[in-house]
Length: 317
Length: 288
Image (cartoon, rainbow over all chains, first blue to last red; front, side):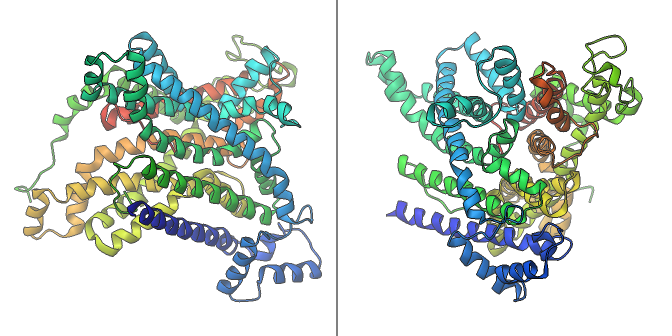
């Protein structure tokens, strides 16, 4: 029951955040210097007919709040207006690129979970030089921005070893997997290091607990002790933070896509900023933030479901 | 007033701080001090004009006149890296200053007034948390134009909740301590107590969080410059240099991108490790 209440309150919070986000994204149009028409057309000379069309589309001749509601209603229906550069529906342009970004983020998430947990467990179980080495590598890993990882990988694996292509997203599943391996690895690096550090800390904490000593003294073989008594408990806190790290990948993809010239939402966002195609900028920002906030909420709720011990307090920590 | 001077004398704090930092933390502090000195005195230190083009010596290898070689237009890489430290370090400094000067008063107000004000501020922080900094910056840049100012203001807002949350939690604990009640009984106003006593007592915590934030802000700002939306070429900036060196990597000249990338990693490492040490040994920093 409490879990359901908690989930409901989190969903309400999600709705509020999404509303505020949409308000910021729409309202920013009025915040900028110059009138909204100039922003929406990117300062291009356009015919009176286009201006009237944009005014009608955005309801610019109506009061601010009403035009916001009109816009919001359209957005909820998936209508983000027309791109000024391509004169096409923004939603069509975006749908063509969502798949690539989703693939990239999912691939990176997988890498983070596999390598992050693995490195963390190894680090906790093998004290001494192995642990120190992993600790050093993860410290540098956390501090390495994705675009720096990108240029190092391009230098080593494309220029030096000719293993992976440096640009493009590929076509078809296998080709795409091959093309997106370096971008995903670059995107996943900092998160992997972070999850490894957390797993290590959590596993160390469990290893020092009495129930682990008890299990050992009962003669349970060490691998089973680690599997059943250490890992299971240690992975609970890791799940939450890993989830939050995964949400962060959504914003991170913008940078990585540009570093590897991957034609996804992120590189389209930057191109649109450069081309002053504001409806597209609005749509992609809104979409990415919405995805980010939703993943965060799902992780929050999941945490309570996984671990019944978590005392549910108010929404804010 | 002198009777109630409850601040710990600064001199007594110093050895404690040094001990907590340990050799690694001290080394990081040293690296940061050196980088700051380089940034401040960059024009004096740089051996050559960072923008002097020399098309006869493009992609030159290391030599006495160009210790790190030259870039695709023959500009001296070492000089560009040295001068580039200025915007690369100044940007995060401005962002962190902005987040602290917005976040700390908000946190104090939240912790002191409690009730609906606290609830409202906490909600506001939650919503801001929901907005990834880089995306907010890109949105701001699309409206106000590319450049450091839009990016700094947007990131300052986006990183403010991290400072505010940590400070609020600590301020709530601090204000329940007996000395605060004593000060109130003596008739000191809320402003006086917050400014003169809470702020100094929570100062080390705020500085620690700001130090960690500096590292992550630097990554965000460099990312924005890397995307071509922040500092504009031909200005020397580490993020810009990574981007402008990228096309020549596949031609076999990764130096420009690699050197500036390594500098960013070293700087961010120094700030995050120092921040961690300042907080309390084993804590993992908050990744943004």
